[in-house]
Length: 313
Length: 273
Image (spheres, helix red, strand yellow):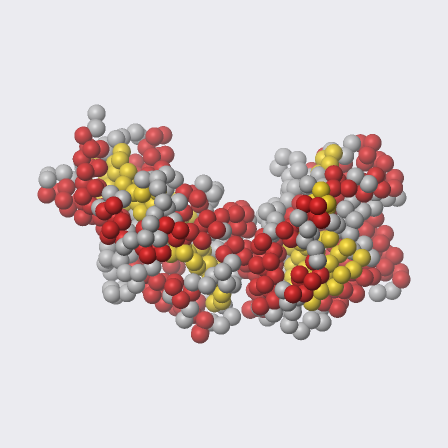
């Protein structure tokens, strides 16, 4: 039902439906409403959907003030501005004060494409992950985002939504049931666990197919919520497979790799490899080019999986 | 405002200063200077202007107060305690483990605190959010906010200023506590924020500049601000950091956060009799 739609369209249209039913929801943009698919909300909700201009820090604290008044604000901008730029406001006005604000960052990591290195948030998950209690959610496809929206509103606290803006391949069908705090087991396997998030999930699924052709059974788990991470799902999988690969569209410092490693080191160490941006900045180029250049393709995941498996004791 | 009322609120201000000195004195250290400089503004707000109910701190439709210069928490706590939001004895727990009165205001800990603040520049934006929220709800609520003059060096203050004027938030009445000092010295020596009046005016606000220790002037300025049709209001309070206690005033910028010995406390209380 969400086929051929961009993620921002799904986001905008579901938000519209929800705003009709729930007067508490407001949308605050910082001059990227056209880019993020929220501008049309202003026609229907001229008071509840508005722009604060290019002033992200102000947007975040305004949202906190509105939340203190009983509203549920969605603040939308690009990922680097939603995190680096408003970090202290997210930490204090929003999270320390436990305000019910949803921060939506679009164009994560290499998906900023032609905006280049300045706009590629390789660190946004890392920046926010060390702030206590904030929830970090990265939807994998339209269906997941669509199902998540109501749960995000119902969850009474700050959430960072790391959202792809354009079209992504569908991972889930109509029968999918989303739980904000439970990871999705997409493929069962016994030889290696592939923990993936965002646009890297489809690469991990491709990698699992390639590994299968070589007789290796890879388990694929979509970690849509990186904080709080579903510890149980991670541990259950590695206890079965004994090897892990993390796949993320983010620096391998501070993001999914770190989150998974923190669990494994404490609870159940297994050989592990990390696919992602290897601690460098981004640059202008299309996603497919950057995936190859930064070794973030299915082939790279296959190689990493074999290496992790080879290190099993 | 008649003469008796003015005198009563002046007496109240002296009483609040005593509570602040006691509160910080019993701990031995704290943000004395900036707490003493905002007393009259708080007294006019909490004893005269604001529609609030200490028995029901979260009452629907109440006016809101945001202390953007969150470090003057001890002054607000003294007022809240005296207004009956909680027992005056609680003031003795200021900044002690498990207290409900932390150095900087925390809406989750203290009855009567409407917004958490402490990281400077954010409270004024939160006030803009509240004023915007009130406009959407059409509940005729006033949002009051005190910003520090030093705090106005934060860029976010001016982002908030722009937005408030753009949104025509005439229900937002802010104060700038112009005590002309900050941690590192005189504001004019650190990074001058002058001319404050012209800055706020050029950002589209109604601006008044008054003696921040004059009860009647504060009251009149708020009443005038309430008549604003489509602009937010800024009332610049020309104040003295450490106001009311001569040896604290004489310390200048050093009174921002200072030790208060038992001897200092008694000496200060003596002066505030």
